[in-house]
Length: 213
Image (cartoon, rainbow, N blue to C red; front, side, top):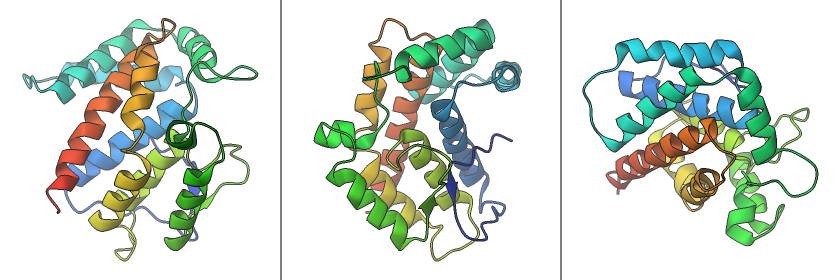
């Protein structure tokens, strides 16, 4: 389906997840990785828009945010989203919105939070792809790492404990703040919907991990 490859792992093969719920979680983390690393192509937007046909009556905050994302994907063009992505996250100098954990946790890029993240990733055998050009605390790379920890075939690494540790140490402390920054930017339209869904998804993930304590 939607499988961005922002991290690499020696001999990684993604196995069938252990449950339908895990499969859905892995797909959603993979989708977020895809949307935050680059503007989506027309096939991705069309795939999202096509999911409107299977909508149901669920009125939870997560589902409403998901429905808004699907409707927005159906109403935009790739060119509009590309321009929006560049305005929000690209350009020269300071972007309108940062998508790096170190910025929110330490006020600057490449600070101690990134060093701690790199140490944790090294412990589980993950390494940044050299050609990617983004640091490991980029939200897309963290999302792809979560996808791997859910769907990977090594139970010593790909388990709920590892997922919870990565999420609570390196995503939950700043993810909602990033979403609020995106939603508050007047240039955001498609990515306002992406941010709204991301914020609700992070809340659901946190509630689920809380049950493990």
